[in-house]
Amino acid sequence: EPPEHVKFILATTEVHKLPSTILSRCQRFDFRRIEPKVIAERLMYVAGQENAVLHEDAAMLIARIADGGMRDALSLLDSAISVSNEVTAAVVSDCAGLMGRDSIYELVRAVAARDTAACLQLLDELHNASCDTERLITELTNQFRNFLIFKTVKHPENLIVCTKEELGVLRGMADLFSNEQILFSLNVLTRTAEAIKRTQNRRIEAEMALIRLCSPETDADVSALLTRIARLEAELD
Image 1 (spheres, one colour):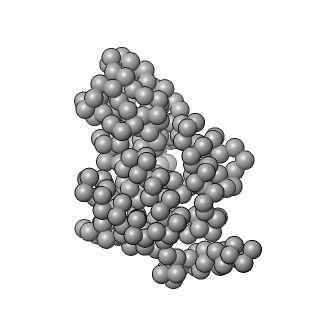
Image 2 (cartoon, helix red, strand yellow):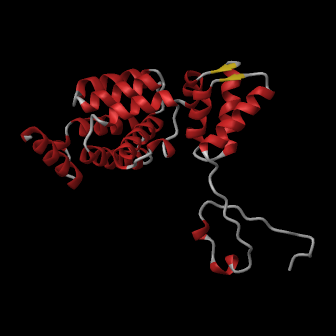
Image 3 (cartoon, helix red, strand yellow):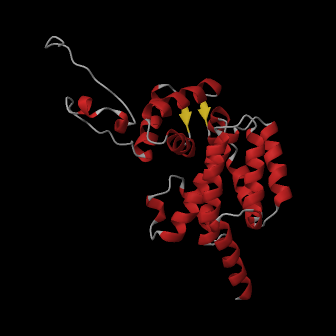
């Protein structure tokens, strides 16, 4: 037994893996993810203390990438400030290996138009610009998740992390897809994200995903079938 003045602190994101013999001897404290708005406000304060200029959309982008983790947000802010004392969304995108906002919008519109050639061309340009493929798939997944929120929630602004300007753009793009198309796209992107972790050639996985998004008939999944049926019904109407 340890002496009375010794305390052990165990930290994990997978508490279900701890044996019951350990859990029964612990006091458990569950920590929640920090809200993006709170993270962004803290980043603005820290940037001010460092005599750096942090744009609001850049702060929100960092908060979204950090996914509730203040440490990750501060680390990314530090990297961005080391690049430029004026931190814009573009600077954050470069530091995080993200594609630019305009590029991802262009890619989404190409998917909506079923323009496979345009999608693969954009992917090639992003690949040559050293865009991280796994992050690209994550960003696309987030965008289609946002579209689903627009389609199903009365007040989507409460669940989507973005600026007011982006909110209007996302609302317009959500109208380009049916619910079936969005669910199919999320299914494809989720499978691709898992596959990317197991392969060395991430680009091929991303290319196959874009081809499936543009041509659901190439996919044997049930969600792909529902997407094709919904498209036929829309054409008949």
